[in-house]
Length: 292
Ligand code: SF4
Image (tube, rainbow, N blue to C red):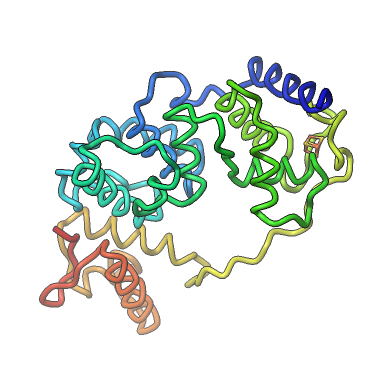
């Protein structure tokens, strides 16, 4: 028990002096703003979210303003963040919260998880960072990696990690504790080459000095001409948003230049179909446009 409280104090002290100066930590954020930032952070790099989150929140400063917006405008404001399905989910989420909860996001992770695009991590992060819940473990990839190494639980299931994460939360300091673990994972406890000599937890860590993981896990995302499909999706959406609508030929030229090959045209059809399936794009009268 004493060991745990020493470890907790060591991390909280380190965090107090070394916290990353992230935009969303430097001003008061309401639960809606926390949700927007957490959804962005799901799949977009921190630097990019720092740059684009303030612009998105300027455009849609409240949950109500997002709920009444046109999806096409939301998708346009999302440009640069990638994985556009999240923008649609966020928009649907705002409409549901207005209809079901009178515009107030619920604080319970179980209710948050029922909203579109809100998985276990995002629900836990909103419950903790927006509502100050003290009993909810917030386990993103950084926290997961740090805890597995720290506790020597390399083969543990996510449920086991979550249970241990819950037990370690210092009473009254859940926000700082989790942000400290995240910063430690981002700054020192790297996946490949952890910098254990600089780590404030090395005295207690069961994996200190053992090095990182090997090669990067293979991704199953389809690629075309060496570019992952999500980038093609973003490029097509930007091209359509820039002009309002495009015929197939214009879309093919926007992506591939003046003389697209048959393979390129086929790939365009596949990318467009995937966007249409996700409700991010429409095809009307053989023209591609953003949904209303
Ligand atoms: S001592 Fe090394 S492996 Fe352990 S938590 Fe710190 S950086 Fe990670």
